Every structure is written in structure tokens, then in C-alpha cells.
Image (cartoon, rainbow, N blue to C red; front, side, top):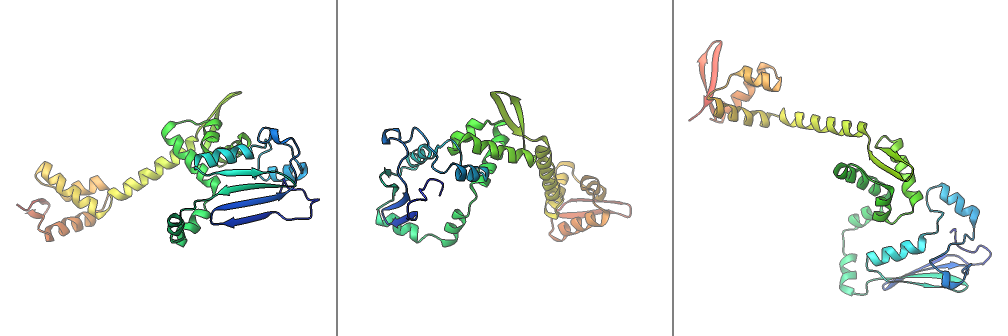
Length: 262
């Protein structure tokens, strides 16, 4: 869209076949072919600036280098043809068994993969990286996703605005860390999850058996103190274990305790 020559009466064409994908764009190169991939000239500077402001492209003209880098990474061949039209050809797998296997894949899985948001993928990766490594730089993200510095910087600013990360350092020595609020929020969430799990009936009954094994007996007040539950809840747990013949009741009145049923 931003590279095509709008004075040529033709449309951008995308031809898909079993062995390749061709993208044909109206417009000649604006520089010698020997400089292809080395220099960048904007045919439609106003349109480029508009799309750049939307965060969809970079101004540096790194597209060709990124294409070559990604095709090398994923072991895919690419060919560029120049003339009155600029053509990019991506060669696909021609192994019929591989093609058939892909065509038989679960449509739901294919749809979900195509709907994946690249920005969200990078965000999740950055957060996971910071949980393990404590800090990250713009360069690390650029090299991981093969993006331009401006694109990475915009994503990092968005994460700062959402209180997910904070910027540290200055000048050429800048890095990013998890926002303390993010760490505290996650810690509280984990603590709540642990507390919820530990206060389930199954956890309490396992704890009762373990307590008796260590101490010989248990009273209802031990359960109330440990789990901050009312006496009726403690009695209910103990009654369930009695029914299952796991424990037996001893004593009477205000002096009642429970032992393992040997």
C-alpha cells in the first residue's frame, strides 16, 4: 500500500499456488538495483508517515532485511524481481504429504493461530523474560522478534503506561524491569490462590491425618486455629473422617479428642 506507484493503472496482486506465494506491486525501484536491501527511498512519504503514526510500520525501511532474516530463520526461500512491477515470491513446501497433513489440521487450531495478536505475544514474552531475568533491553527484544527500534520502543511505552514495567537508566544505558506494582499484584494473587487451596475440605482432612500422625491426637480447636474456621466446620471435617474409618472419637463433654483408627 505505501510502496506502490499510484500513477500506474493496476492493483496489488497476490497469487497463491501450492508451491509459492507471489506479491506483485505496481512501481519500479527508485534506486539502482545494486543498492537493493541497502538503501530505502519512500515513494509516498505522506502515506508512510500516516501509517507510521498508527504504529504499523517503521520509518527506517528495514522490510527487506527482515524478510531475508525471517525466511532464513524458518528455512523458506524468497526471490525478488524488479521491473515495471516489484514482485516478491515466497516458495512453499511442495511435499504433498506435508501439504495434505496441514490441510487436515483442526480448523479451529488454524483459526486461533491466525487470530493471534503479535503485540500480545511480545508483551507476554517480555513479562515472562523479566520474571526470570529481572531486566530487559530494547536490543534483546529487537533481536528476538526482528523488529525496528521504534516499534519496540512504542510497545515498551505502552507497557509502562499500563504499569506493567518501568524504565531504568539513561542515555545509551537504558533497561526495563517489572513494575513493583505488577510484582505485588502477582504476589497477592498467588497468595490468595494458595490460601484458597489450603482452605479446601480435602486439604484440611489431609492436614488432620498428618497432624494426628505427628502428635498422636487432635482436637477441634487445633483445626479452628490452623485454618481460621468455625467449630461446626471442624466438626464436619472430623465427622467425615470418622465415617471413612480414618479416625475415632475419644473422651466426652468438653474433653474430646480424635485419634487414628488403628
